Length: 328
Image (cartoon, rainbow, N blue to C red; front, side):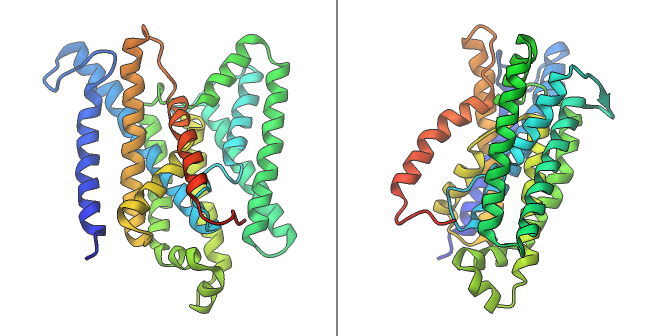
């Protein structure tokens, strides 16, 4: 019996329940029938934050799933190809030079971060093409090289920055949803819509990639074109999330792996399951950080710190349980 549809139905119900109930929780519990200022907090602050968390978690999870299929490795993450480092470099430069502006409701930091993410995507793509073809090992090594180089530039910027700027850079790099609003949500939706639909459309090709690129070629798949589409779709989704929320790690590694245990490796079911689980997982993590602020006297834990605390042990467990070596 195919357990995919049943599991998807359960995940959908859980996701809807999460979206309905999560806005109620924070430093103080606010019921559905709230009025006045509490109603404004519920609908104007908590609801868009919950929706942003769900969209961001879904995008990170789908990107991780795509990269894991592309590299045939469940340890791959959305940040494997340096998109996060590029976005962080853009944000760090913006903060270091003390620039401040808002364009069409989007903060200058988010714009600079997205430009940095695009720069990283273009550099990785250019290096891979320069080497000849579009081979997966070259793509992976180019991403790792760009990631290390940008990370070293970020450290240099922090070193030459003052205390205030350095603190802002570090805080941004922790990843947080504390500034999420409806404008940020509307900025995320195009990336989610285009990237998510493209990956759903390519579910058959990703199934073949997981078996082997040679098999995909024998089945008539234009592997070079498909790899480019997967790379661009996943990278743009990651760039959009990191530009608005900062780098939130491990969602893209944990969610696809857990969903494979729930629905199997068929991307026809794995893609929607990853979308639902990733969004639900980050929403619950962010809800916990809001509740935690009540216990900590008002200091909110950045959600990126919480996901890293959960993801670190999960990564080690996955690494120890993985049979065989790690292939590029």
